[in-house]
Image (cartoon, rainbow, N blue to C red; front, top):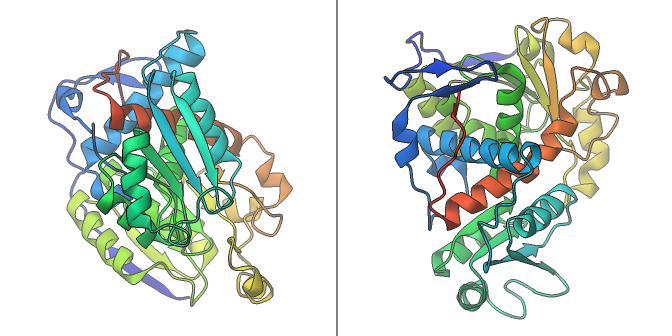
Length: 356
């Protein structure tokens, strides 16, 4: 069994030293400093660039919008008169639908641009595209192959850029995942999340954010499919700073042991189709089943960002009461709305702060 304990720190996670008054719904009043966090004008390329308080604020805003719009049936035209350019080099159901419907629900105008409409770096350079779009819309969400494309857009644009997915990170997925877990468990700090699968962009975003929320992270990947080395080094540093555990192993059962949440993703991403046969062979034994969860916490749950393939998780787990995949998918909408509102306005949530 190959195991490497990357970081263990027994110090208690340092919470904000303010009065906390819990409510029955898992919310709390306090940590007033979160109310002073402003993200207006910022871009979101990776959660590496966001502090603990800033990520908590994004989740708080998202939960607030969900409560007011979905449950209280309020109309909040917070983005009226604004427009978003949605650049998609890679197709997606959840990213397109959540962004397009979410922006419209807030009173704004979404404009969807496929590779048939805009050829980044081909017909027009990314530099010129960024400058042109800065004069035509208020914000850009780009779902691209290369993370460097996002960095170039952000460098040249005078408006916020959101990473809708790149080869290195998928931050908007992780915001949805953490909101889903907060809703289910009532808080995040102290949870153990176990990633069983490929060392990909979704995992990288978990690694850039989990420790900041007091979440322990256990990672099982086949040899040769480990996360990016530079991402790993930063995750180690964050784990030490926030007093959480970060464990790397090649044994799925070890990663699942004592875990609250089991997570996986596709083994073959778009652009890796030629590697499918080899990847399926290399990931043998990594399918998440009830047997995998037999060593986890009694109330363990399951996440998957979708779309899902049978080899990654069987039907028994995927369609069970332990599976949070469909609330997770819905929360893609509320968290992208929360992010867009936070980057474009000075909105302050009306509901009590989430309990973290």
